[in-house]
Length: 102
Image (cartoon, rainbow, N blue to C red; front, side, top):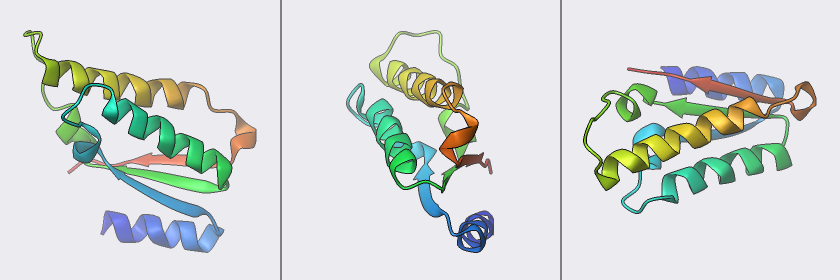
């Protein structure tokens, strides 16, 4: 239902619709998830107006680990990249970011 609602919003506003599932953004190799995030925002800026829909954000940030394992570092890098991209928005970009959790 969430995805259908976001697609309807994009169609009604004539905006480009980009969907990124949070679990798919956490990749096996360190830095790949952050790169996917940068590419999504770059594409949205190029195709604006755009809606970026990130589903299952809770799956990516569900746990915080005290251990220093590479998988944990990849989750942290991906989350920090998403926050960094959101922080740099200006009103003229015409980009909406919508996140959802299960």
